[in-house]
Image (cartoon, rainbow, N blue to C red):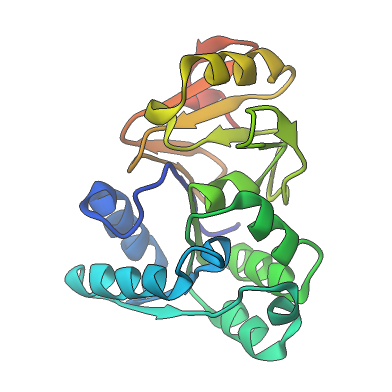
Length: 218
């Protein structure tokens, strides 16, 4: 049995995610959230952590930043130990390509997976959600590339309401043989410990271009 996995469509640390974050805090049974601003390494990572601190304080919890911005950071035993001990870890948004390059095949990634497998909550928003699957949508054009594969044969599109119709159509056309989940900003697909999925907000699932039920995911 794993913990809860949350694929969030963006808008993290804002009122858009109130329902999602309350549910995740309850599932974690903890009042501290470990925040990785890795994907925002080139876009004010400290601001992302500060936003998380202010946001979770309003929910009666405490957020703590884990300053992992490079692969060297992901090899450091100190953040690895912090990730391994965390009951609720949050991957913030930014660049999915950078986040993937930092985490792939590192002790930190192994620690994140182990903490989730031990019953912890792992949440990824926007870029953080994209990298947790494999394949991963390439935001530069809507095609697919390799993700970290915590959830295999699944891909997600965050901020779905902001995607141009042409790019969405291209992504749907290329998603053959695996489901594609589209997430509105603030929405989330939650994978429960028993492997079932739950939608919070506007979540759609497509197989071969056709809408299907979220319950079809496993």
